[in-house]
Length: 413
Image (cartoon, rainbow, N blue to C red; front, side, top):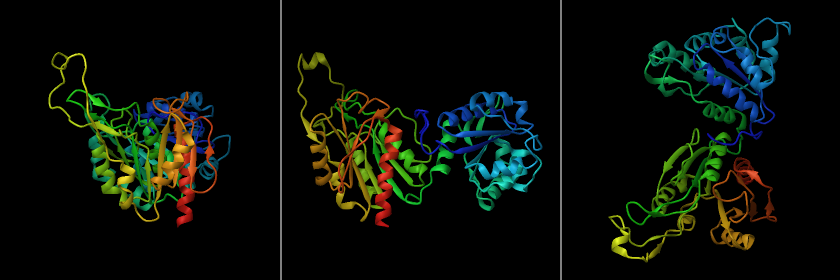
């Protein structure tokens, strides 16, 4: 997920990534990409074309990966270097991928180390185009991309629309940012049969209930746990919808993000989509109550005096209200954030709301709950004893939860 903590973790940890860099001004981003992948625990081999070396030096990549950058087809390591690279890597990513590279790759050329390695590998290949918008729109470039995607099975990531090189204005052709490319690589590395083609629905973040046009009732949820779950489910191969209350987090890559503000709005979206979901995760911190009356004008102290009373009305319990619309055989996960009687309250929620799993955590514990990047949770299920996990990053907690969801999916066929 963009903005997630860069520590060795799944699915990058212990995997081998070949990063191809071609001759584009966007090559400067590839240095950050190589660094980030290394921090995520991947072993990164960088292959630079001759044109790439006009923009970035091999030494830059050696400094951030701790591994020798590769530039020549024929080296002292042997003429079959491309074969060894192609066989050993788990994924190949070419970022940036210029129009010239796309043409050579589509033709099956073998005139440099990068293109030759592509012919020798059977690993997933991700191509991240980067060029001027007029070049990207050219019919031959589009034909080459279609050939790579449909004939060779390459994954095309991007380009984005935005500022291009100096003097070229804006438009589609800009290479994706490193954080986005990292997720596309994670998607290639993290695919799991249990999640392939599955529909996953996740709620996240707080809701805001208006008192007047300026003020609202809400809570301190950042949405980080739900966003991490949505991103991790996409990496595993699911089609993911994230229904999010107000959050400052960047949208997860590849995820259908539906933004809402109030509990009623979230309820409406969930009710409309839950019947198609193979997995539903209720991770949002939905406000239990809202002001019974939302005023049309700002409440003024001068008019109200030293005290003000606000009548509250109950919001819908989204998980309970939509239970009857759940897809038969689907897996449903709830969260229980408590300040006392953690396991007892979580067990009641597991039973009363028909959840398959409940993820419980103590809001008063340091390093857990709202506004932090870590969490310490206990996972309750309908079978077996509660599983207490150690303090982990929320990204790691998401993987642990989805491990258990995957097993449930597998057992239900």
